[in-house]
Length: 145
Image (cartoon, rainbow, N blue to C red; front, side, top):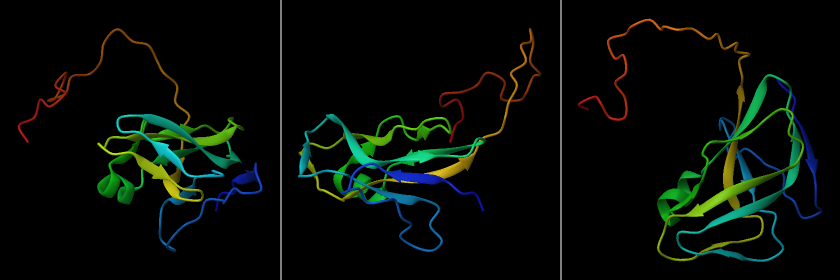
């Protein structure tokens, strides 16, 4: 088990929580004092009221909530967003309204989910050639299916 420290930054902040025992993600709540409207095709930075101390070798990934996506066309830009282990500022959610109607974010509304993931320590080694594969340079929809 990995321990992640969490600090409440406001009295109104609701800390992330799992909605079912086997959920991989923790739902994140908006730390707002009043309703906040996101206009169609607009972006908003939603505060959460908490910060984290993630152990080195791990990250937190911020992901959209499927219910907000399918029912209201609300997503997260830069998804998944990454909270690095050395970041100590407030976690904020870059929320985008892909829809054609304003979306109201209410105080303590579940607006995103957070999944913790291990990060491998990688060493990049510069080279002048790479091994060939069947796919090779094919990308960006090069397959038929």
